Image (cartoon, rainbow, N blue to C red):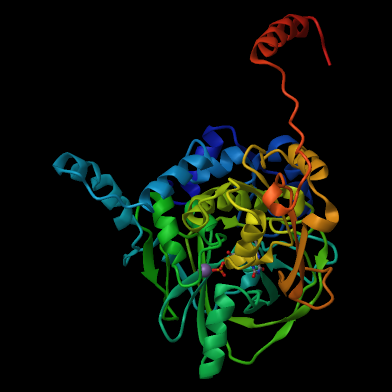
Length: 484
Ligand SMILES: Cc1cc2nc3c(=O)[nH]c(=O)nc-3n(C[C@H](O)[C@H](O)[C@H](O)COP(=O)(O)O)c2cc1C
Ligand SMILES: [Mn+2]
Protein backbone atom coordinates (compact mmCIF):
# COMPACT_ATOMS: atom_id res chain seq x y z
CA UNK A 1 0.00 0.00 0.00
CA UNK A 2 1.34 3.45 -0.93
CA UNK A 3 0.78 5.91 1.87
CA UNK A 4 0.55 8.81 -0.55
CA UNK A 5 1.39 10.04 -4.03
CA UNK A 6 5.01 10.81 -3.11
CA UNK A 7 5.44 7.22 -1.96
CA UNK A 8 4.06 5.93 -5.28
CA UNK A 9 6.30 8.24 -7.30
CA UNK A 10 9.35 7.01 -5.35
CA UNK A 11 8.39 3.42 -6.18
CA UNK A 12 7.99 4.33 -9.86
CA UNK A 13 11.44 5.92 -9.85
CA UNK A 14 12.96 2.81 -8.19
CA UNK A 15 11.42 0.64 -10.91
CA UNK A 16 12.71 2.94 -13.69
CA UNK A 17 9.13 3.79 -14.53
CA UNK A 18 9.50 7.56 -14.10
CA UNK A 19 10.98 10.21 -16.38
CA UNK A 20 12.02 13.41 -14.62
CA UNK A 21 11.77 16.50 -16.82
CA UNK A 22 13.84 19.29 -15.34
CA UNK A 23 13.79 21.74 -18.26
CA UNK A 24 10.98 24.32 -18.25
CA UNK A 25 7.88 23.07 -20.09
CA UNK A 26 4.73 25.18 -20.26
CA UNK A 27 1.38 24.06 -18.76
CA UNK A 28 -0.05 25.90 -21.74
CA UNK A 29 -0.23 23.11 -24.43
CA UNK A 30 3.38 21.94 -24.08
CA UNK A 31 3.04 19.54 -21.13
CA UNK A 32 0.01 17.96 -22.81
CA UNK A 33 1.83 17.62 -26.14
CA UNK A 34 4.78 15.90 -24.46
CA UNK A 35 2.43 13.61 -22.52
CA UNK A 36 0.53 12.70 -25.69
CA UNK A 37 3.77 11.90 -27.51
CA UNK A 38 4.92 9.72 -24.62
CA UNK A 39 1.55 7.93 -24.37
CA UNK A 40 1.82 6.96 -28.01
CA UNK A 41 5.23 5.31 -27.53
CA UNK A 42 5.36 1.50 -27.13
CA UNK A 43 3.62 0.26 -23.98
CA UNK A 44 2.40 3.73 -22.98
CA UNK A 45 5.82 5.25 -22.14
CA UNK A 46 7.06 6.19 -18.64
CA UNK A 47 5.30 8.20 -15.94
CA UNK A 48 6.22 11.89 -16.13
CA UNK A 49 7.21 14.41 -13.50
CA UNK A 50 7.67 17.95 -14.80
CA UNK A 51 9.73 19.63 -12.10
CA UNK A 52 9.69 23.08 -13.67
CA UNK A 53 6.37 23.91 -15.27
CA UNK A 54 6.95 27.37 -16.72
CA UNK A 55 5.75 30.05 -14.32
CA UNK A 56 4.95 27.76 -11.35
CA UNK A 57 6.81 26.24 -8.43
CA UNK A 58 4.52 23.21 -8.13
CA UNK A 59 5.72 20.11 -10.06
CA UNK A 60 3.24 18.39 -12.39
CA UNK A 61 2.86 14.57 -12.41
CA UNK A 62 1.12 12.69 -15.24
CA UNK A 63 0.87 9.31 -16.96
CA UNK A 64 1.39 7.63 -13.59
CA UNK A 65 -1.29 5.05 -14.43
CA UNK A 66 -0.39 4.99 -18.13
CA UNK A 67 0.72 1.37 -18.64
CA UNK A 68 -0.44 -2.05 -17.53
CA UNK A 69 2.63 -2.40 -15.31
CA UNK A 70 2.04 0.92 -13.53
CA UNK A 71 -1.70 0.33 -13.19
CA UNK A 72 -0.83 -2.93 -11.41
CA UNK A 73 1.76 -1.13 -9.28
CA UNK A 74 -0.81 1.52 -8.35
CA UNK A 75 -3.09 -1.18 -6.98
CA UNK A 76 -0.19 -3.20 -5.57
CA UNK A 77 -0.86 -6.42 -7.50
CA UNK A 78 1.17 -8.47 -9.97
CA UNK A 79 -1.80 -8.82 -12.32
CA UNK A 80 -5.16 -7.04 -12.25
CA UNK A 81 -6.88 -10.43 -12.37
CA UNK A 82 -5.42 -11.21 -8.94
CA UNK A 83 -7.85 -8.60 -7.62
CA UNK A 84 -10.69 -10.31 -9.41
CA UNK A 85 -10.20 -13.53 -7.48
CA UNK A 86 -9.88 -11.64 -4.19
CA UNK A 87 -13.11 -9.78 -4.89
CA UNK A 88 -14.81 -12.98 -5.90
CA UNK A 89 -13.69 -14.56 -2.66
CA UNK A 90 -14.90 -11.64 -0.56
CA UNK A 91 -18.22 -11.45 -2.39
CA UNK A 92 -18.90 -15.15 -1.83
CA UNK A 93 -19.24 -15.60 1.91
CA UNK A 94 -18.87 -19.22 3.04
CA UNK A 95 -19.87 -20.55 6.45
CA UNK A 96 -16.80 -21.75 8.36
CA UNK A 97 -16.81 -25.54 8.78
CA UNK A 98 -14.95 -25.44 12.14
CA UNK A 99 -12.49 -23.50 14.27
CA UNK A 100 -9.59 -23.90 11.82
CA UNK A 101 -11.79 -22.63 9.01
CA UNK A 102 -12.95 -19.73 11.14
CA UNK A 103 -9.36 -18.70 11.93
CA UNK A 104 -8.59 -18.85 8.22
CA UNK A 105 -11.36 -16.32 7.72
CA UNK A 106 -9.75 -13.70 9.95
CA UNK A 107 -7.76 -12.00 7.17
CA UNK A 108 -11.03 -11.72 5.29
CA UNK A 109 -12.59 -9.91 8.25
CA UNK A 110 -9.65 -7.52 8.27
CA UNK A 111 -10.30 -6.75 4.65
CA UNK A 112 -13.93 -6.03 5.50
CA UNK A 113 -12.78 -3.65 8.23
CA UNK A 114 -10.58 -1.86 5.67
CA UNK A 115 -13.71 -0.86 3.77
CA UNK A 116 -14.61 1.64 6.50
CA UNK A 117 -12.80 4.98 6.37
CA UNK A 118 -11.61 6.52 9.64
CA UNK A 119 -11.27 10.15 10.67
CA UNK A 120 -7.97 11.68 11.74
CA UNK A 121 -7.29 15.19 13.02
CA UNK A 122 -3.78 15.80 11.70
CA UNK A 123 -3.56 15.78 7.93
CA UNK A 124 -0.77 16.49 5.42
CA UNK A 125 -3.39 17.98 3.09
CA UNK A 126 -4.01 20.73 5.67
CA UNK A 127 -0.43 21.76 6.40
CA UNK A 128 -1.22 25.06 4.73
CA UNK A 129 -4.70 26.65 4.83
CA UNK A 130 -5.38 29.39 2.29
CA UNK A 131 -8.79 30.94 2.89
CA UNK A 132 -8.21 33.46 0.09
CA UNK A 133 -6.38 30.92 -2.08
CA UNK A 134 -6.44 31.14 -5.85
CA UNK A 135 -6.37 28.48 -8.57
CA UNK A 136 -3.98 30.76 -10.43
CA UNK A 137 -1.20 29.46 -8.16
CA UNK A 138 -1.55 25.94 -9.57
CA UNK A 139 0.02 24.72 -12.85
CA UNK A 140 -3.37 23.70 -14.27
CA UNK A 141 -3.00 22.65 -17.91
CA UNK A 142 -4.55 23.86 -21.08
CA UNK A 143 -4.27 20.58 -22.98
CA UNK A 144 -5.36 21.29 -26.56
CA UNK A 145 -5.40 24.44 -28.73
CA UNK A 146 -9.19 24.74 -29.03
CA UNK A 147 -9.92 23.99 -25.37
CA UNK A 148 -12.10 26.59 -23.67
CA UNK A 149 -9.29 27.22 -21.17
CA UNK A 150 -7.44 25.42 -18.40
CA UNK A 151 -8.99 22.28 -16.93
CA UNK A 152 -8.39 20.29 -13.76
CA UNK A 153 -8.53 16.84 -15.36
CA UNK A 154 -8.03 14.38 -12.49
CA UNK A 155 -10.00 15.76 -9.52
CA UNK A 156 -11.76 13.57 -6.95
CA UNK A 157 -15.07 15.35 -6.43
CA UNK A 158 -16.62 14.63 -3.01
CA UNK A 159 -20.32 15.29 -2.34
CA UNK A 160 -23.00 13.98 -0.01
CA UNK A 161 -26.64 13.31 -0.82
CA UNK A 162 -28.33 16.21 1.01
CA UNK A 163 -31.15 13.90 2.14
CA UNK A 164 -29.45 10.62 3.01
CA UNK A 165 -25.91 11.81 3.69
CA UNK A 166 -24.53 9.07 1.39
CA UNK A 167 -21.12 10.03 0.01
CA UNK A 168 -20.10 10.01 -3.63
CA UNK A 169 -16.70 10.48 -5.22
CA UNK A 170 -16.38 10.96 -8.98
CA UNK A 171 -13.71 12.21 -11.36
CA UNK A 172 -15.32 15.13 -13.20
CA UNK A 173 -13.18 17.70 -15.01
CA UNK A 174 -13.29 21.32 -13.86
CA UNK A 175 -12.79 24.21 -16.27
CA UNK A 176 -11.05 27.15 -14.61
CA UNK A 177 -13.09 30.35 -15.16
CA UNK A 178 -11.01 32.42 -12.75
CA UNK A 179 -8.98 31.95 -9.57
CA UNK A 180 -12.11 31.20 -7.49
CA UNK A 181 -14.60 29.61 -9.92
CA UNK A 182 -14.68 26.55 -12.18
CA UNK A 183 -17.14 24.48 -14.15
CA UNK A 184 -18.38 21.26 -12.57
CA UNK A 185 -18.68 18.75 -15.38
CA UNK A 186 -20.62 15.96 -13.68
CA UNK A 187 -22.72 14.48 -16.45
CA UNK A 188 -26.41 13.87 -15.83
CA UNK A 189 -26.02 10.11 -15.28
CA UNK A 190 -23.34 10.46 -12.62
CA UNK A 191 -23.38 10.41 -8.82
CA UNK A 192 -22.42 14.07 -8.31
CA UNK A 193 -25.20 15.21 -10.65
CA UNK A 194 -27.75 13.21 -8.66
CA UNK A 195 -26.68 14.90 -5.41
CA UNK A 196 -26.95 18.27 -7.13
CA UNK A 197 -30.42 17.35 -8.42
CA UNK A 198 -31.55 16.67 -4.83
CA UNK A 199 -29.96 19.91 -3.59
CA UNK A 200 -31.73 21.87 -6.32
CA UNK A 201 -35.08 20.31 -5.42
CA UNK A 202 -34.50 21.39 -1.81
CA UNK A 203 -33.29 24.79 -3.01
CA UNK A 204 -30.01 24.30 -1.13
CA UNK A 205 -26.37 24.98 -1.84
CA UNK A 206 -24.37 21.73 -2.25
CA UNK A 207 -21.03 21.56 -0.41
CA UNK A 208 -18.31 20.14 -2.67
CA UNK A 209 -14.73 19.21 -1.83
CA UNK A 210 -12.15 18.29 -4.44
CA UNK A 211 -9.09 16.20 -3.62
CA UNK A 212 -6.07 16.38 -5.91
CA UNK A 213 -3.43 13.66 -5.78
CA UNK A 214 -4.27 11.32 -2.89
CA UNK A 215 -2.72 7.81 -3.00
CA UNK A 216 -3.05 5.96 -6.33
CA UNK A 217 -5.68 3.38 -5.27
CA UNK A 218 -7.98 6.18 -4.12
CA UNK A 219 -7.38 8.20 -7.28
CA UNK A 220 -8.36 5.15 -9.32
CA UNK A 221 -11.45 4.48 -7.16
CA UNK A 222 -12.99 7.85 -8.06
CA UNK A 223 -13.03 6.80 -11.73
CA UNK A 224 -14.61 3.41 -11.00
CA UNK A 225 -18.25 2.76 -11.99
CA UNK A 226 -19.46 1.99 -8.46
CA UNK A 227 -23.21 1.35 -8.23
CA UNK A 228 -25.06 4.47 -7.10
CA UNK A 229 -25.19 4.77 -3.33
CA UNK A 230 -22.09 2.66 -2.74
CA UNK A 231 -19.23 4.67 -1.30
CA UNK A 232 -16.12 4.74 -3.48
CA UNK A 233 -14.09 4.78 -0.24
CA UNK A 234 -15.11 1.16 0.33
CA UNK A 235 -13.48 0.19 -2.93
CA UNK A 236 -10.43 2.30 -2.09
CA UNK A 237 -10.10 0.70 1.37
CA UNK A 238 -10.31 -2.74 -0.18
CA UNK A 239 -7.70 -1.95 -2.84
CA UNK A 240 -5.36 -0.24 -0.34
CA UNK A 241 -5.76 -3.07 2.20
CA UNK A 242 -5.94 -0.29 4.77
CA UNK A 243 -8.67 2.10 5.87
CA UNK A 244 -8.78 5.45 4.11
CA UNK A 245 -7.93 8.29 6.50
CA UNK A 246 -10.23 11.29 6.29
CA UNK A 247 -10.01 14.74 7.77
CA UNK A 248 -12.79 17.28 8.22
CA UNK A 249 -12.72 20.17 5.77
CA UNK A 250 -11.99 23.65 7.08
CA UNK A 251 -14.85 25.56 5.43
CA UNK A 252 -17.45 22.97 4.37
CA UNK A 253 -19.18 20.06 6.08
CA UNK A 254 -17.36 17.25 4.24
CA UNK A 255 -14.42 14.94 4.89
CA UNK A 256 -11.51 14.52 2.49
CA UNK A 257 -8.52 12.14 2.21
CA UNK A 258 -5.84 13.27 4.67
CA UNK A 259 -3.01 12.15 2.37
CA UNK A 260 -4.04 14.29 -0.65
CA UNK A 261 -1.68 16.91 -2.05
CA UNK A 262 -4.23 19.68 -2.41
CA UNK A 263 -7.89 20.16 -1.41
CA UNK A 264 -10.29 22.62 -3.02
CA UNK A 265 -13.22 23.32 -0.72
CA UNK A 266 -16.34 25.03 -2.00
CA UNK A 267 -19.93 24.66 -3.11
CA UNK A 268 -22.27 24.54 -6.08
CA UNK A 269 -25.35 26.79 -6.04
CA UNK A 270 -28.80 25.53 -7.03
CA UNK A 271 -29.94 26.86 -10.39
CA UNK A 272 -26.61 28.30 -11.52
CA UNK A 273 -25.24 27.21 -14.94
CA UNK A 274 -22.41 28.42 -17.11
CA UNK A 275 -20.98 27.52 -20.51
CA UNK A 276 -18.43 24.72 -20.19
CA UNK A 277 -16.14 23.58 -23.01
CA UNK A 278 -15.02 22.97 -25.64
CA UNK A 279 -12.62 20.34 -24.35
CA UNK A 280 -10.38 17.92 -26.25
CA UNK A 281 -11.91 14.77 -24.83
CA UNK A 282 -11.08 11.08 -24.60
CA UNK A 283 -13.21 10.46 -27.67
CA UNK A 284 -10.31 12.00 -29.62
CA UNK A 285 -12.53 14.96 -30.57
CA UNK A 286 -13.43 18.24 -28.95
CA UNK A 287 -16.67 17.96 -26.99
CA UNK A 288 -19.16 20.73 -27.69
CA UNK A 289 -19.69 23.54 -25.20
CA UNK A 290 -22.70 22.97 -22.93
CA UNK A 291 -24.17 24.43 -19.74
CA UNK A 292 -22.95 22.95 -16.47
CA UNK A 293 -23.07 23.84 -12.75
CA UNK A 294 -20.43 26.14 -11.31
CA UNK A 295 -18.00 25.38 -8.47
CA UNK A 296 -17.20 28.26 -6.10
CA UNK A 297 -13.98 27.97 -4.13
CA UNK A 298 -14.10 28.82 -0.43
CA UNK A 299 -10.69 27.59 0.69
CA UNK A 300 -7.57 25.78 -0.55
CA UNK A 301 -5.75 23.52 1.87
CA UNK A 302 -2.52 21.81 0.84
CA UNK A 303 0.83 20.33 1.73
CA UNK A 304 3.74 22.69 2.20
CA UNK A 305 5.33 21.38 -1.00
CA UNK A 306 2.51 19.88 -3.04
CA UNK A 307 2.66 18.03 -6.35
CA UNK A 308 -0.05 18.61 -8.91
CA UNK A 309 -1.37 15.28 -10.25
CA UNK A 310 -3.25 15.50 -13.53
CA UNK A 311 -3.82 13.63 -16.78
CA UNK A 312 -4.26 14.35 -20.47
CA UNK A 313 -7.03 12.79 -22.52
CA UNK A 314 -7.18 12.80 -26.31
CA UNK A 315 -6.98 10.33 -29.18
CA UNK A 316 -6.60 6.85 -27.63
CA UNK A 317 -4.63 5.20 -26.23
CA UNK A 318 -3.86 7.51 -23.33
CA UNK A 319 -3.59 7.15 -19.58
CA UNK A 320 -7.35 6.78 -19.03
CA UNK A 321 -7.37 3.57 -21.08
CA UNK A 322 -5.44 1.84 -18.30
CA UNK A 323 -7.73 3.23 -15.59
CA UNK A 324 -10.64 1.80 -17.61
CA UNK A 325 -8.83 -1.52 -17.96
CA UNK A 326 -8.61 -1.71 -14.17
CA UNK A 327 -12.38 -1.22 -13.93
CA UNK A 328 -12.91 -3.88 -16.59
CA UNK A 329 -10.95 -6.40 -14.50
CA UNK A 330 -12.25 -5.34 -11.06
CA UNK A 331 -15.92 -5.24 -12.00
CA UNK A 332 -15.97 -8.47 -14.01
CA UNK A 333 -16.31 -10.73 -10.92
CA UNK A 334 -19.05 -8.46 -9.55
CA UNK A 335 -21.00 -8.51 -12.83
CA UNK A 336 -20.63 -12.27 -12.86
CA UNK A 337 -22.48 -12.45 -9.54
CA UNK A 338 -25.69 -11.65 -11.44
CA UNK A 339 -24.57 -12.81 -14.89
CA UNK A 340 -22.52 -15.95 -14.14
CA UNK A 341 -22.61 -17.05 -17.78
CA UNK A 342 -20.15 -14.27 -18.66
CA UNK A 343 -16.68 -15.69 -19.26
CA UNK A 344 -14.79 -12.48 -20.07
CA UNK A 345 -15.31 -8.94 -21.32
CA UNK A 346 -13.10 -6.31 -22.94
CA UNK A 347 -13.25 -2.61 -23.79
CA UNK A 348 -10.71 -2.11 -26.61
CA UNK A 349 -8.79 1.20 -26.52
CA UNK A 350 -10.15 2.33 -29.88
CA UNK A 351 -13.70 1.85 -28.55
CA UNK A 352 -13.23 4.49 -25.78
CA UNK A 353 -14.78 2.21 -23.11
CA UNK A 354 -18.36 1.89 -24.28
CA UNK A 355 -18.34 2.33 -28.07
CA UNK A 356 -17.21 -1.28 -28.46
CA UNK A 357 -17.86 -3.83 -25.74
CA UNK A 358 -16.75 -7.43 -26.31
CA UNK A 359 -18.30 -10.20 -24.20
CA UNK A 360 -17.78 -13.96 -24.25
CA UNK A 361 -20.45 -16.18 -22.72
CA UNK A 362 -21.09 -19.78 -21.85
CA UNK A 363 -24.17 -19.99 -24.07
CA UNK A 364 -26.84 -22.10 -22.39
CA UNK A 365 -30.14 -21.43 -24.15
CA UNK A 366 -31.58 -19.94 -27.33
CA UNK A 367 -31.34 -16.17 -27.44
CA UNK A 368 -28.78 -16.08 -24.66
CA UNK A 369 -26.58 -13.47 -26.41
CA UNK A 370 -29.52 -11.04 -26.51
CA UNK A 371 -30.19 -11.55 -22.82
CA UNK A 372 -26.63 -10.41 -22.11
CA UNK A 373 -27.03 -7.35 -24.35
CA UNK A 374 -30.21 -6.36 -22.55
CA UNK A 375 -28.62 -6.95 -19.17
CA UNK A 376 -25.68 -4.67 -20.04
CA UNK A 377 -28.00 -1.97 -21.37
CA UNK A 378 -29.71 -2.00 -17.97
CA UNK A 379 -26.64 -2.19 -15.75
CA UNK A 380 -25.07 1.00 -14.35
CA UNK A 381 -22.69 2.75 -16.73
CA UNK A 382 -22.78 -0.29 -19.05
CA UNK A 383 -26.04 1.31 -20.25
CA UNK A 384 -23.77 3.44 -22.46
CA UNK A 385 -22.57 0.36 -24.43
CA UNK A 386 -23.09 1.51 -28.02
CA UNK A 387 -21.96 -1.69 -29.70
CA UNK A 388 -22.01 -4.97 -27.80
CA UNK A 389 -20.47 -7.98 -29.49
CA UNK A 390 -21.30 -11.33 -27.89
CA UNK A 391 -19.21 -14.39 -28.73
CA UNK A 392 -18.97 -17.96 -27.44
CA UNK A 393 -16.71 -18.85 -24.52
CA UNK A 394 -13.93 -20.29 -26.71
CA UNK A 395 -13.26 -16.87 -28.28
CA UNK A 396 -10.62 -14.69 -26.60
CA UNK A 397 -12.17 -11.23 -26.30
CA UNK A 398 -8.80 -9.75 -25.30
CA UNK A 399 -7.69 -10.45 -28.89
CA UNK A 400 -9.45 -7.93 -31.11
CA UNK A 401 -8.32 -9.60 -34.34
CA UNK A 402 -9.79 -12.93 -33.22
CA UNK A 403 -13.10 -11.25 -32.38
CA UNK A 404 -13.18 -9.50 -35.79
CA UNK A 405 -12.59 -12.85 -37.47
CA UNK A 406 -15.33 -14.58 -35.45
CA UNK A 407 -17.87 -11.80 -35.97
CA UNK A 408 -17.23 -11.79 -39.71
CA UNK A 409 -17.66 -15.52 -40.03
CA UNK A 410 -20.45 -16.02 -37.47
CA UNK A 411 -22.99 -13.32 -38.05
CA UNK A 412 -25.78 -13.01 -40.53
CA UNK A 413 -26.37 -9.25 -40.44
CA UNK A 414 -30.14 -9.24 -40.87
CA UNK A 415 -30.65 -12.00 -38.33
CA UNK A 416 -28.00 -11.29 -35.70
CA UNK A 417 -28.15 -7.55 -35.10
CA UNK A 418 -30.26 -6.17 -32.28
CA UNK A 419 -31.02 -2.46 -32.13
CA UNK A 420 -32.37 -0.62 -29.14
CA UNK A 421 -32.83 3.00 -28.04
CA UNK A 422 -32.11 4.62 -24.74
CA UNK A 423 -29.76 6.85 -22.78
CA UNK A 424 -26.31 7.28 -24.32
CA UNK A 425 -23.16 8.85 -22.92
CA UNK A 426 -23.12 12.64 -22.68
CA UNK A 427 -20.00 12.59 -24.86
CA UNK A 428 -21.86 10.79 -27.68
CA UNK A 429 -21.61 12.97 -30.77
CA UNK A 430 -23.31 10.84 -33.43
CA UNK A 431 -26.81 10.57 -31.94
CA UNK A 432 -29.46 13.07 -33.12
CA UNK A 433 -30.21 14.18 -29.57
CA UNK A 434 -27.81 14.73 -26.68
CA UNK A 435 -27.78 11.78 -24.26
CA UNK A 436 -30.45 9.83 -26.16
CA UNK A 437 -29.76 7.52 -29.06
CA UNK A 438 -29.56 4.01 -30.38
CA UNK A 439 -27.36 1.07 -29.55
CA UNK A 440 -26.56 -2.17 -31.32
CA UNK A 441 -25.74 -5.69 -30.29
CA UNK A 442 -24.19 -8.32 -32.54
CA UNK A 443 -24.89 -11.93 -31.67
CA UNK A 444 -21.73 -13.59 -32.97
CA UNK A 445 -22.25 -16.86 -31.11
CA UNK A 446 -22.72 -20.14 -32.96
CA UNK A 447 -26.39 -20.43 -33.92
CA UNK A 448 -28.35 -23.42 -32.73
CA UNK A 449 -31.11 -25.43 -34.39
CA UNK A 450 -33.39 -24.23 -31.59
CA UNK A 451 -32.67 -20.69 -32.79
CA UNK A 452 -33.86 -21.61 -36.28
CA UNK A 453 -30.48 -22.46 -37.80
CA UNK A 454 -31.05 -25.66 -39.77
CA UNK A 455 -27.70 -25.90 -41.58
CA UNK A 456 -24.56 -27.39 -40.00
CA UNK A 457 -22.24 -24.97 -38.19
CA UNK A 458 -18.69 -25.22 -39.58
CA UNK A 459 -15.88 -26.68 -37.47
CA UNK A 460 -12.86 -24.56 -36.54
CA UNK A 461 -9.68 -25.77 -38.27
CA UNK A 462 -7.19 -27.33 -35.83
CA UNK A 463 -4.54 -29.97 -36.53
CA UNK A 464 -3.97 -33.11 -34.40
CA UNK A 465 -1.93 -32.82 -31.17
CA UNK A 466 0.79 -35.05 -32.73
CA UNK A 467 1.15 -32.98 -35.87
CA UNK A 468 1.05 -29.86 -33.70
CA UNK A 469 3.99 -31.05 -31.59
CA UNK A 470 5.96 -31.93 -34.72
CA UNK A 471 5.23 -28.47 -36.14
CA UNK A 472 6.51 -26.79 -32.99
CA UNK A 473 9.74 -28.82 -33.08
CA UNK A 474 10.44 -28.04 -36.72
CA UNK A 475 9.49 -24.38 -36.28
CA UNK A 476 11.90 -23.94 -33.38
CA UNK A 477 14.74 -25.20 -35.61
CA UNK A 478 13.70 -22.95 -38.51
CA UNK A 479 13.22 -19.95 -36.24
CA UNK A 480 16.88 -20.02 -35.12
CA UNK A 481 18.17 -19.16 -38.55
CA UNK A 482 15.36 -16.87 -39.70
CA UNK A 483 14.71 -13.18 -39.11
CA UNK A 484 11.40 -11.51 -39.89
C1 LIG B 1 -9.56 11.24 -16.62
C2 LIG B 1 -11.05 11.10 -16.47
C3 LIG B 1 -11.87 12.20 -16.64
C4 LIG B 1 -13.25 12.11 -16.51
N1 LIG B 1 -14.01 13.22 -16.68
C5 LIG B 1 -15.35 13.13 -16.49
C6 LIG B 1 -16.16 14.30 -16.58
O1 LIG B 1 -15.68 15.40 -16.86
N2 LIG B 1 -17.50 14.17 -16.35
C7 LIG B 1 -18.07 12.97 -16.03
O2 LIG B 1 -19.28 12.91 -15.81
N3 LIG B 1 -17.32 11.84 -15.96
C8 LIG B 1 -15.98 11.90 -16.17
N4 LIG B 1 -15.22 10.78 -16.07
C9 LIG B 1 -15.86 9.48 -15.82
C10 LIG B 1 -16.30 9.31 -14.37
O3 LIG B 1 -15.24 9.60 -13.49
C11 LIG B 1 -16.80 7.91 -14.16
O4 LIG B 1 -17.95 7.72 -14.94
C12 LIG B 1 -17.10 7.58 -12.70
O5 LIG B 1 -17.48 6.24 -12.60
C13 LIG B 1 -18.18 8.45 -12.16
O6 LIG B 1 -18.43 8.12 -10.83
P1 LIG B 1 -19.91 8.23 -10.24
O7 LIG B 1 -20.67 7.04 -10.75
O8 LIG B 1 -19.72 8.20 -8.76
O9 LIG B 1 -20.48 9.50 -10.72
C14 LIG B 1 -13.83 10.86 -16.21
C15 LIG B 1 -13.01 9.75 -16.03
C16 LIG B 1 -11.63 9.85 -16.15
C17 LIG B 1 -10.78 8.63 -15.95
MN1 LIG C 1 -20.48 6.88 -7.35
